[in-house]
Length: 321
Image (tube, rainbow, N blue to C red; front, side):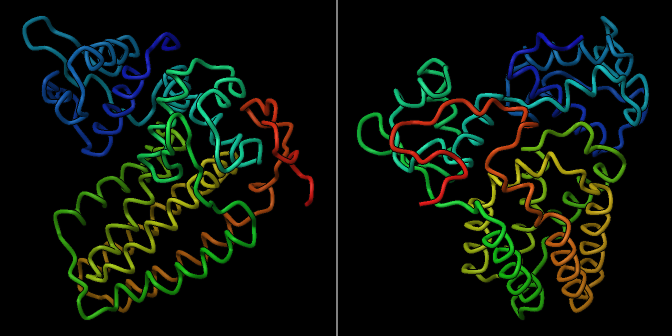
């Protein structure tokens, strides 16, 4: 039903579903196109296409006089709609991430190199590189060159990252300068409750990663310690590609969301000692569940992204040097 949606239409579809779930909108709630377009940060055209697909799925209703409104609960969406929501918003982006992670792309590379490796047009390659640059894992070099930044690409490095997070994040909550912003806290809690209620099923791996990073970075920002926040942001940049591969693992998404909510509830009560303890336990539990060797396997026949060739001068995946 939804396989023909463009990138912007797919994004609008996921954003609308996420918004309805997060805000727990009741049946009959009116959703103006212009309101959704402003919330998503796009034009009304992709929003209208996305709303029409939700009408086809039976969860939205369209009236020529009133416009669009919620027709049915978003808790149990049709299987074909869920499949679309779970699909990546940009397969080429994940192919680049996978190629870099498994060592098929060197530290410095040109757009022409990547065009050959990924078998894509230069304009499409440039788009995903610009996105990667905005996310902090690649930098622009002179001309058409790009340089990939260091990343967490081994189990030992991943484990070390969690050890550092377990030290700085609970300490931030216990800082005398810790000042939570209640409006931000409640927005984070709404998002986590939506995930707890099954919203993770409508999220891509990238969206799940960004939701998790946003929560932890926001709490770190409340600590008032700029260096703690900078450190956490840098760690998040370095672990991004590994986290995308975590999508293959059957992680307890709802349990993780419940832990996030418990931390936020303790912070709102002013029980910072309990919040710090919960944060430490949460990080240690995530470390146990997520620091698995399979995530860092350089060659996996079950990978959905094609492994493709390796650029000249790059050692084959799994080789030692």
